[in-house]
Length: 152
Image 1 (tube, one colour):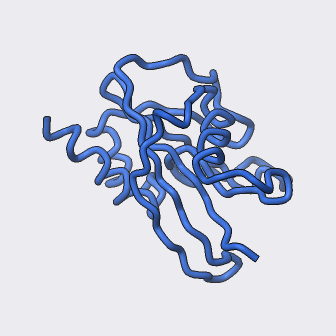
Image 2 (spheres, one colour):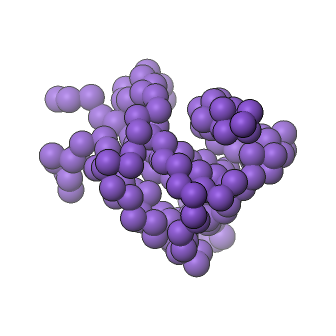
Image 3 (spheres, rainbow, N blue to C red):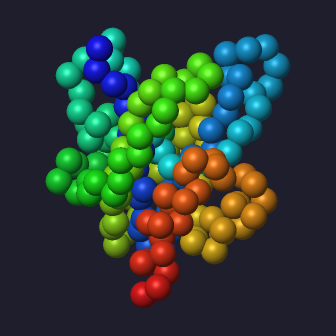
């Protein structure tokens, strides 16, 4: 069986990065528990999309969480991070793609049923990191992506 993967998009336009606040326990009784802000995207579903590439997965997941349409041509592979199996998590690769646009497109009003959408300046993102509201596995990747943009 092939190693599974997850795909995420680092999307930057008009001075802001798009992040989603992921909710957990949405299928259990009671209010969902807010977890953290992260890059839009997620795990590949090989049963529903058996021939989907990481790039196609990133486009599909990003659209589902933000309502923004992307093309394969505008996605640039930023980094692939191998993740070792741990706990309930199987070994997989995390693909991070980047997109930069001049104009900010319209976002879904509230994200999907599991996420909230937010647009953040690089400075606001650093505040999320300081307040421990950013996904710990995404922080370094997002900082690395934003550094050359902020340096300009």
